[in-house]
Image 1 (cartoon, helix red, strand yellow):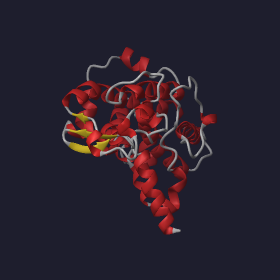
Image 2 (spheres, helix red, strand yellow; image 1 turned 90 degrees about the vertical axis):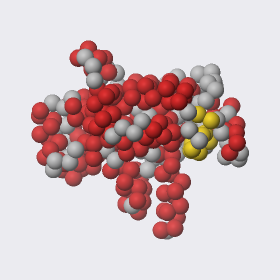
Image 3 (spheres, helix red, strand yellow; image 1 turned 45 degrees about the vertical axis):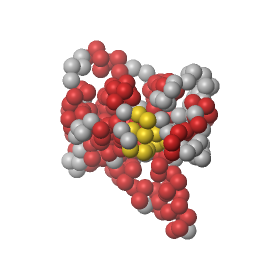
Image 4 (cartoon, helix red, strand yellow; image 1 turned 135 degrees about the vertical axis):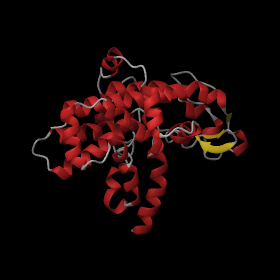
Amino acid sequence: MKLFLSLLMLVTSSSVLAWGNTGHRTVGEVATKYLEIKTQKKLYDLLKGESLARAATWPDEIKSEPETYQHTFHWHYTTWPQEASEHSESNENAESGLLLKSINEQLTVLKDVKATKEQKIFALRFLVHLIGDLHMPLHVGTGSDQGGNLCKVMFHGRPMNLHSLWDEGMIEFTKLSYTELANFISAGKSAKDLKAITQGSVIDWARESKEIVPTVYPLEVSPTQDPAVSRSYCKKEAPADEAPKLSFEYSYKFMPIIEQRLFKAGVRLAWLLNENLK
């Protein structure tokens, strides 16, 4: 059984990580800037002073204990076929990912005045993390390339896959700490900007990610075409020399989008906590 769980961990972990530690901590740090005083007090009581930035990475850290937390491994992503205009948690299952359902479940716990402190802590840590996942485009992917994990690329001469390029590669290349990145992307935002960002629902925010997905593949494809199907470098057997060679041009184009997604995730997380933490 332990061997099976270890193998399961190897299979699932690469397809459910999003943003990496720096990205997730940035979301938590941005959210902290926009918490109401009453929410800050509730969070301090629940987390005993632990910051949202630190809590944000816990759902990835517990993957080292699959015997206890295996049931959460499919919470981090959802499969939204490129040709499908609509999607909801009713379309989700363990195979396709349960991101939408899991976010709503954590919100339900946070709103429940009868929930125990331990239940709220668990829900809170996951909500911080999952809202970050929701805003990473490849966590709302088509599923045909395992969220970009099958797509081999070279970034500044370093081999990686498209998923790891988005969750860590471009962010780490900036050499910014999560506090620096949070401060940079929060600068100059107005009350009008913040209000606009908090409009919509979880599914609307997921749709934003879904609409970005076709554009992230080197050599862009039609928004109606599944990019993984048409790209030779997104196949398991693809030779390394077919991997697109990416550098400054790619990150210059997409790093602003990453910054936007991280900022929106943080603002929306703060809004959800202000509205739902009881």
